[in-house]
Image (cartoon, rainbow, N blue to C red; front, side):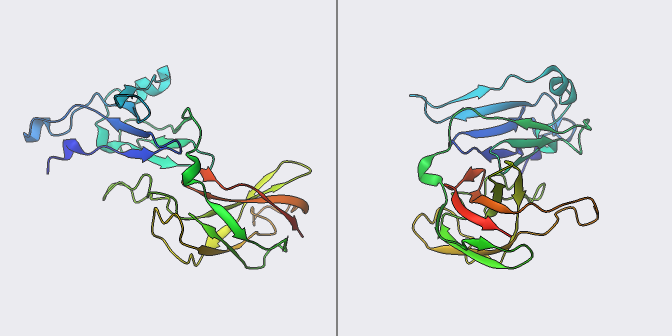
Length: 226
């Protein structure tokens, strides 16, 4: 296969697709990896679906000027943004892309059972549907193993608005697009995420809990964190 065809993509929460792509090589070794890559978003909502080129900030445009598409990596973040790096290209900065639109409601995880009281450092199980999302989102062959079809547990302290992420493990399933399959995952909220930071003071009290899959959060449920 001509590696000039390699280009990363990420399925966005709205159902559109972001990709970093450039000119296709002519099959010769000298022109196998061609520069001139740019970002494009596939708009599936248009009457005639189309790839729209994304406006790039000047700093990013300069960074990717000589990049072939295969050097780019896209990673879906829990907040629905996409992280871009070209670590094996010419750049030394990372960038985030904030897509327009809203998450596809049919792709949203749901929570069906959860612990009402959570004590830090203890293991709990949370149940629901679509914890693994509708796709792997941004898995990229042998270049970047960064699929995100796994649940992320997010806790938000009501009084301060501070956000904490738990450790999830022992998922009951990893299959994507299982819209009605009941699933579960185990999780912990640590006492202090910065385990080496003596100044860290864990927050407790009323909070909300969400499960996030592929940048799409579930509706919040109310919990108490001790």
